[in-house]
Image (cartoon, rainbow, N blue to C red; front, side, top):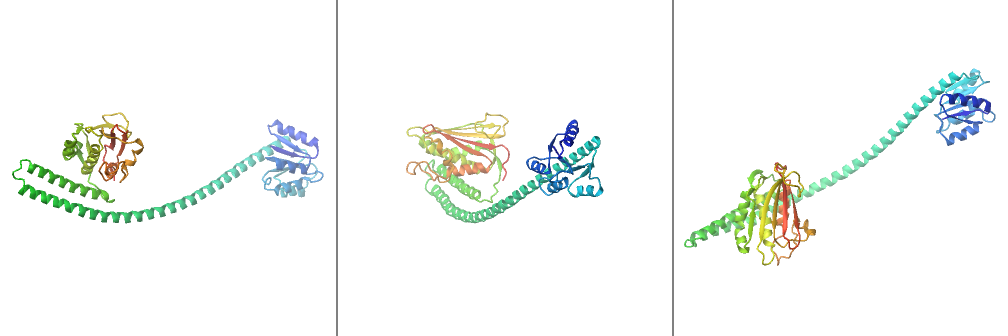
Length: 407
């Protein structure tokens, strides 16, 4: 929008007509005071200002516009029919004008100058807007950088403190592991020694005596190995040996170890014949299935013979409910029993160490088995979930990636 300032209406109308013919919008003010008021209410891209006016003349208006932050960048063209001398032209430029045209006005020359000044004004305006945006962006980024540095410093301090706590905890855990190792392994050695003596000296006439003795010795040795593996597993820096092993072999060993418990409860263990090969720590998976099957035997309904079914398939994703896929990237192993079950709200709590849903008098146990089971599965980049309803048994589903786990 262009502002025309002239105290004579007969001068304004021809100018408006010329501008209109070239698609340029304009407004008019009949005095310098009115022009200043209008610039406070609206933004103008150019002002064409007559020099000779009553009250404030054009030079005074130009100086007032140049002295205001709001209007100092608006280009001004001075028009004059009388003040054509050099001193007036010089004063016009000193008063903030960018051009000085004397009357009579050449319409073509005027339009050429107006369009040139408008173009320069728009370019300067775009440049100012861009600079303002850059200043704001720099301020925002600076503020974000300062906040980020503060957060990083705070987080670093937290991590340093956590690392110290972990180092202390690891040291204490290693000391605890040594004590546990000594206190548990010493009785095992004595058990092995005394059982051998019993077998050699006391059971020569008992047909099944040597067999039971040998089974006891093997169980003690396996327990000793289990203690060793648990101690290694408990150390944060431990790097377990990962090997490919047949889950059928592991399951057969677990079934053999729990054979007596199944006989006592007249239980039944149904194991799928083609369980997969797993890459991991074999002894840890032996413990996983020993824990899960032992729990299934333990938490049984009165006068109901326990029945446990173990199956496996492959799936494409780690979703527990994913359909089977012969070439999937994950193993899904399901352990289902017909025991007492539990409320769905406890499906996470049962994996917390030392958490029990029943008192010790009703069901024996330390409350650590499922916590260790979950930790082992997670150590192999897997997940385990439980599903159950009271009185309808429990189902544990393990998802394991087929590729080698990373540490």
